[in-house]
Length: 214
Image 1 (cartoon, one colour):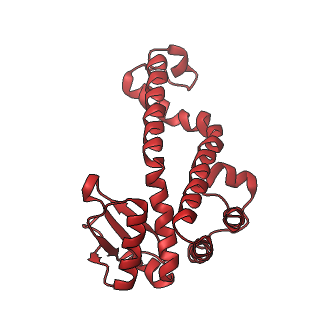
Image 2: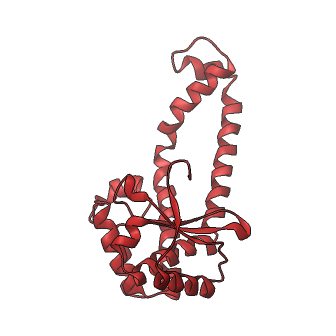
């Protein structure tokens, strides 16, 4: 990432102290707070952490700091910390490995089957061609699994929101979400069927409604 973006230490001491207090409440150890020049590409705002073990660093997009008030930045970071503390990253990696393993198993079953090639109009049977054909047809058959993937992703988003409200104010997260959805030009009322297939995050109205109950 340093090849393409500039990182500088967070200079806003008031915000830094607020973030450090949040990290202490969450039991998260960090080696530093940094600001990334995300504005060089878009107005999209975000916060994330990078690194492993004790070398983890907190990074804020400069657009996020410019657009949100300190309590709102704290709430957004609390949401991201929720993903980490609730092991969402590990769970998604494990799922990805499982899906990859299952795909390789199916590929192993099909790669020597003549009907697989003939059904796709190919007469030559070989591993490279079988791999190419498998990559071409897999999205067609896995398309209807997308709602299950988005359902799991949305579940994680709701859980991270709940974690954030336990370490910051729900009202701050609501205001931050409204601003981020506006800046990212996201549809606030998407078509429910299209959203179920393609949106990894819940619609803004649904997230905000849940947050207001917490």
